Length: 95
Image 1 (cartoon, one colour):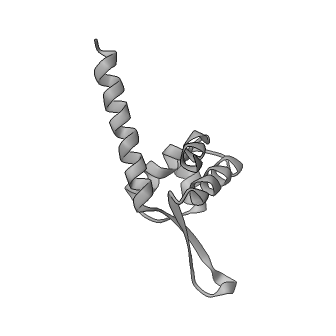
Image 2 (cartoon, one colour):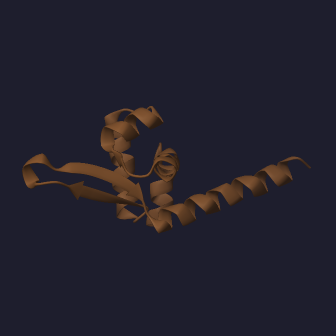
Image 3 (cartoon, one colour):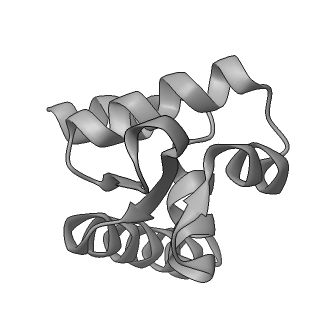
């Protein structure tokens, strides 16, 4: 259920799509790419982290840590299921 909760959060699917397309990104770049405020992006990322759909990566020394986010294999699989559901919906909405 954590996965469904995370996907229900505003901007979550957009974050997954952005990370799949761009690879690892800084928080500010994610905010810019999905056109969201920092609060919305932060809540969505926290839910995605809890459900293991994205990873948080810290690089550098403690004083100058750089934090990135990247999509996990589970995140890619979930995104592919979403795309499959969209295709099914499109197929049957044309009838």
